Amino acid sequence: MYTKQNLVDILNSTGGKIFSVTFTKRTTGEVRQLNGRLGVQIGVKGVGMKYNPVERDLLPVYDIQKKAFRMINLSSIKEVKFQGKTYRAE
Image (tube, rainbow, N blue to C red; front, side, top):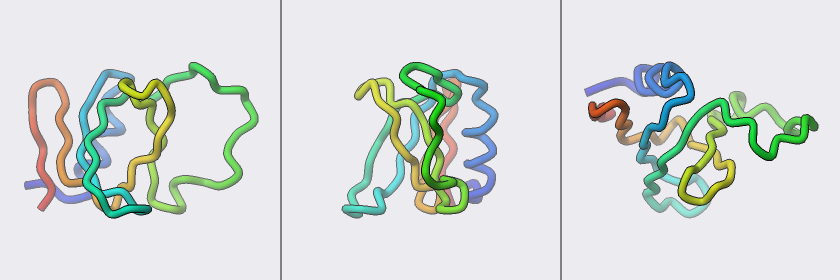
């Protein structure tokens, strides 16, 4: 079992490689599974966001299946899968 901070550190250490994360969405409360990557530059226009996602406990990632950027609710991560290993939250 891993703490929330351990799971966030694992996500940040993926180095642009594909990972899978399971978390609870803030808006609907549904459990969501996402396959994504960090550091993707596709479609980025250089304008920037109107808010800082870190302050809202969010992590922007590129969703490979939907081919769009999505936000992961860091406070509700349940599981991270990376390089064949599964890391579950406490």
